Length: 409
Image (cartoon, rainbow, N blue to C red; front, side, top):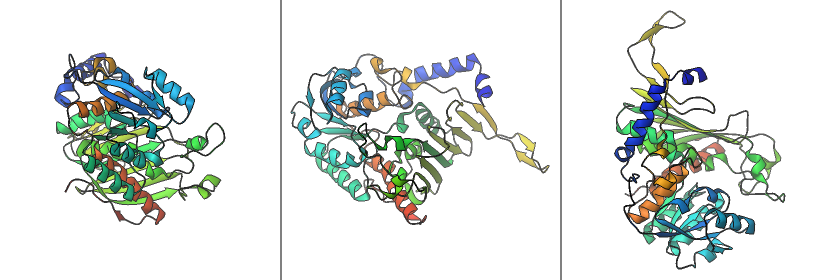
């Protein structure tokens, strides 16, 4: 596969890069930031969570002032202050929310706290960006939805897979009709070794201790939903575990290291995902989109992204029968963060496939432009709820279960 990648010509690479540099506005006007800012408005942001929250470059955005930061741990607060060039910090989210200057809050706290922290922030009158997932239970999904609709404030979930370079390309391909009809898809989130994150530096259990893999589904579900807009309507889930003590004694009563789920979409299509914490697996967050005209496959580590085209070429199989022989070739992936889809200062790699600066820009733009964000509450719950129900299915020996739809009726 690496030979296939190396065989790509420099001319083709040049053409792909040039297309990326000029396609930002055509692909998605609301991301385009060519020339000077469209507004001089400054959004005063509070950043909460001094590990993951360090990587979102709010201080580089021309419409942002980082007003305050917060973390329960002093060293993390200090790092946030340094990273965001901010002189004000608070010991907790609750204290930060009392600051009248803070207009919007970016929450990067432990996953089990997201729903409660989002609701608290909205009730304090602040717009909110929150790390994934949106909720841990279907009941929490409804509670967050109620708070967003009641307050009328901006909500966005910071899903990285929506803004990876390959997903942006897939969106463009889909809008241009290159796939034909996407009839199935797949996604994998492999993070082996995560049990090492089950403890903090003092030997205490963290929220990751025994965390159910399918309750962290959004790095997979976003790949399909962000591209086609489909909703996942039914699921059969399967889990795998071993005799590790962590699986016998955790707050989630979770017996699984790895989770697999097979979904039916509201268009009758198939989508399967795997979220795995343990095993002989290469680290990856990747998706596949399979169409009747073209398919597009994200790469595993050290391999190229590639496309497969349906065609008229025929070949003989092992039995001597004539069969179709679709053409596969490496794809020169566009680097969208180099384009005018982002403010000039944010056109750099930013983590999780270049997605972080896109998340920041989309959240701030939704406030400045007074519109819904791309990953609004309805999209966030469409990403999140299928994993919650998939985990319940796995606990019930793969029972087929219906997934609620949270979209506006």
